[in-house]
Length: 136
Image (cartoon, rainbow, N blue to C red):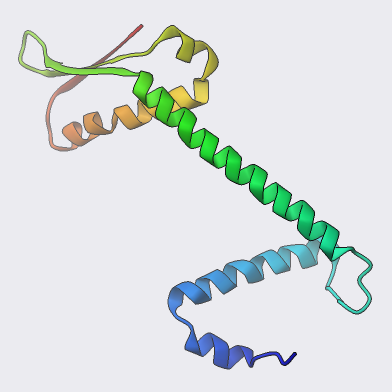
């Protein structure tokens, strides 16, 4: 198998493709610092086995990411968000958080509350007076 000329290949690629290769090259450098320079002819590692392990890790981390997204979505939907005006005419945002979320889903709750407060930050940036009440 012939190896393409690296300089010519890089010149033909777009910015995102070059950034992708730079990222992969960084991973190769990290591996080199950890294990030394690779010599495919003499390296004793079982790359087929290691590939299987890495693919399994990829699947696990992909599932973790998907489940985290679901937990955050569920936490967000569990929030009770109401916006009203107080007696002085100021906007009041109330966030009701079910006790079960306070006890068992601290990180997801934090992410959901941060998401719910984005409109409050936007209002503050517009110069509006905003009061936030967080209740059980």
